Length: 144
Image (cartoon, rainbow, N blue to C red; front, side):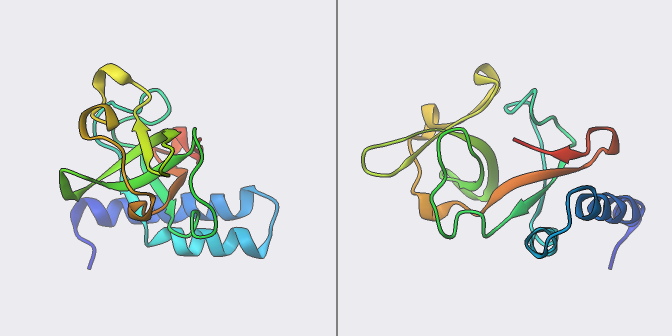
């Protein structure tokens, strides 16, 4: 059940998702991506990914983006914080170690807690790729 603030955001978020579906050239793959992303949404807190992502941004995450190929340097990922598994992080892959582990970096290094603090992460922990900002509407669009 949606209550209070969530109830007001739902129509706007639904509208933004429809824009995501119809703004790009139609393809079955794109529609599937929006459908599976709708259940994998995250809100950005903190300034570690500015200017690309700002506090209050709501993102759709494609949970299957890295099912067939591992993330590459420069890719955005969603992964649990190695120090606190119930906290999810949106970071950029800075590099891939020789053993295949991912070194994560924030776009704003002075404000970011990333692999410089907690080390590299195992790529199997990655939960998906943030790919579309649907809120706030003035910033809606693909994220990279």
